[in-house]
Image (cartoon, rainbow, N blue to C red; front, side, top):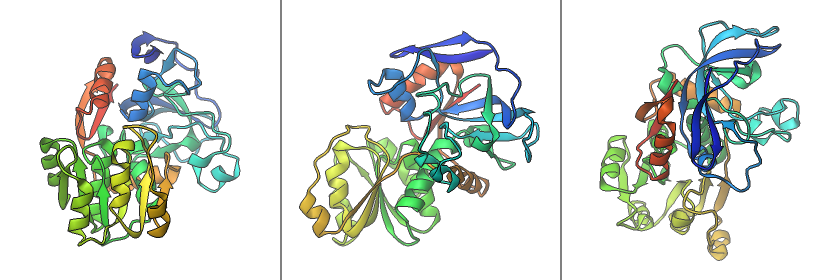
Length: 340
């Protein structure tokens, strides 16, 4: 079968590998249908010194597949169903796993497509406990965005930031995969959305998604706009994933007691923080990584209700590296989905 593997920095190759054996007890055999791209794919592709892994490595962290065989002891699944596989190999037995906090697993083996073989191959055996059913009527390319994109936003906005209807939220880099979803989710619950993007074209597209106020962060100070829109009060929540270049402005945009939730650092991992402002204004900074299994289900439920991801483009497996280059250069609006 075909698999897309990483052999070295920026060196991906489409190769022939042996198909896995028949699914074992507790496993589903998935015919992979699509893989959605994320920045973790870019990091792995261009080389990360801290990543402990063996190459070659099959890439792809976020995906959807079709059940083609069912292992012994698996109940509640049928051949032909679409399944979203969880992107990390968790233990399933530690306290965090038992409590449904999968992304805090104490014995996690790694992230698929980054530390461990991922989903960019024709056939994958996956433990059924790490699969989520896709509701009928959801397109393959949309379902491919549930495992990381929708679930990450669900976890950030509702588990961590505790966003409430009627609040004001600042969404950074709103033209990204998670940014576009955050805008749509926040608007769907009646929030006022201030959004940033890096070009006038992206600003117009973000506005078309429903954002109430849009700022081109290359030309204007988004924190000034946030203070003006809120009559100097500040926003209730900042959805942050850019990192160093927006960090100080994001904190300045918050109201007294406001919440900043962050899941990324694409512009740099270190940023200065005004500690006096932090404690005097009683701000809350919340780190968020990945999501729990239930967040995937919640995201798929919203897709079934009509809230869909923004798809920038679909490409064949052979176009994976070129699509990563576009993502790295931020020449993307929404999600790139690789079709298998």
